[in-house]
Length: 324
Image 1 (cartoon, rainbow, N blue to C red):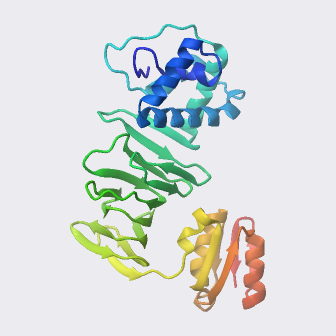
Image 2: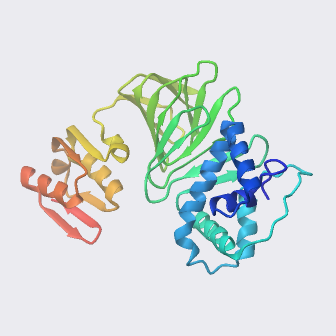
Image 3: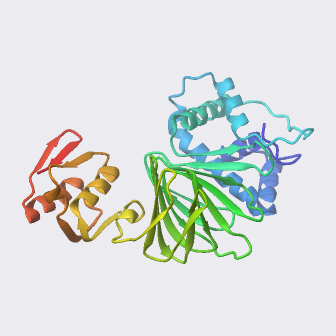
């Protein structure tokens, strides 16, 4: 069971969220939240898991007591010998706790608290929607769908984060503590900047919006300035390129900005955004350049504009789309 002090533990937080806490317990939680930002952050993540689980609670058919034990293990930060506040279990919040476990295992939006050592490690995962998270230093991360980050609940001399998938990072300036993002075998080192990182299979792409970053892979590094990008393929050295367009931002802005953008690049992002498979019949069509902006636009509307403007035939079979 996760113990915070002699009065606050996960059970008390459960009762607090359900409005079942006594006056003494409510006051204890309020005081605990005011102690420091880490307590407030833990509670905020705990509450997100709890609220996301409510829709699943009525459907839960798992062993509730066993599920509650598994949930407690996931958020376990119990110091040995800590005093436990005795309380009577309530079946309704056991059902919600069981649903929390189902939610986490199912891979929906989840904040998992891991404790292999001190400081406590935290992981943030996005499910089928984008997700924004604030790191302990105030940096803000926007995760694309099916992506995740892990980091320490309290940064030390270096701010280290590990990414799987794709995310946009707006890093709080702190010259005394470099920010190091690990992605695959590569790492990105910054002091204060904003940049996008995407890992797909063996390919890593880093695009800088503001400031400067260093991308290192196998001791080979490149320096990036705004509107530059580095591409890392497997164990190869990073290759620096000029970044054209803002398509990479689509998952944050809900806007596809095309500036002389090849159709094949737009098709790739449309496939990601709308969960379809768009293929192009020949290179001549794929090399057509597009200059326009689509904001909160349906896929059918976008394809209709492409078809009518560039005389491109659109064939659709379920989630498979071919441009001819």
